Amino acid sequence: MSVAIKVIARVLLPVGVVAVGLLSLIPPDAVPVVNLWDKLAHFLAYAMLALCGGFAFSAHRTEITLGALLIGCGCILEIAQIYIPGRSGSIADAIADGLGVVAGMVIVQFLRRRFTKPVVGV
Image (cartoon, rainbow, N blue to C red; front, top):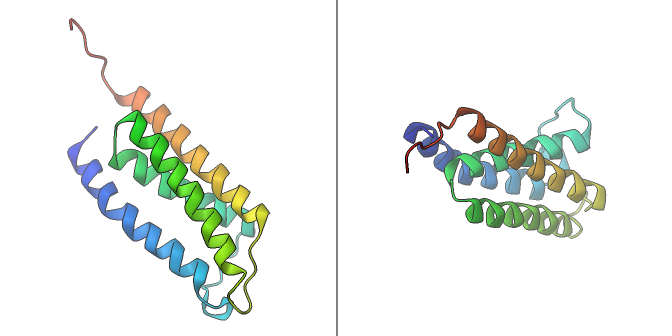
């Protein structure tokens, strides 16, 4: 994998996590209106986080840990929304978050296999 992609992904991952966290915890009237089905928005946000994380760290064990952390983050943010006036936590949103993480990691694995040259003669 290109070093440039890894560097960009390592910058975008924490920025994305902070953005998702802030958007999840601010009052609903301050959230930008996105004309997407709510569950699709959750799915896409967490899929993008997983893509960034998958490209930022290449070890398989790290990807599993990252995936678990992102799923946990989504669950914690859904629970935190219960305590924010005007917001509500949702199991369906947490499931959409988790499915987004899984889809992002599957895409990373596919792209890594597709574009990585096999090592010959080792």
